[in-house]
Image (cartoon, rainbow, N blue to C red; front, side, top):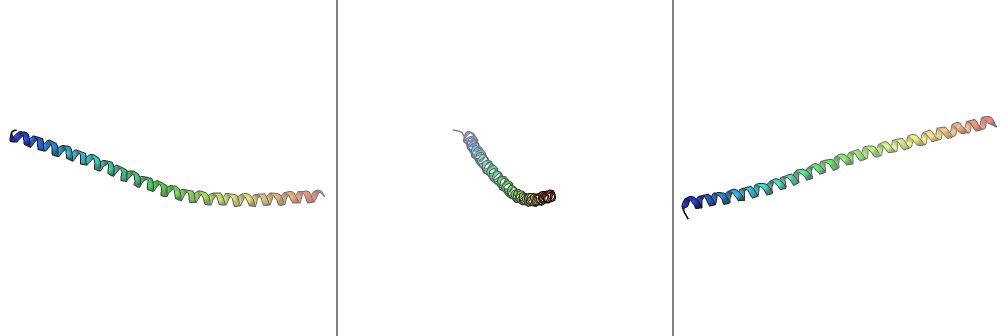
Length: 82
């Protein structure tokens, strides 16, 4: 084996190891990016859930108030007929 062949073989081996490390690192980086993205989405959805829950509570309160008002109005109509 000539020195040039050994040099080429060593360079090829080094390149392949470097490519393997690059692939492994990119997969890890992608995974970290995906996890961070999912965490951000979860935080956003939790905040949206709180906002929507508050809105539901407001609407339920408004509904109760309207029902009370309707019941009172119906009660007055019934009293006026008697």
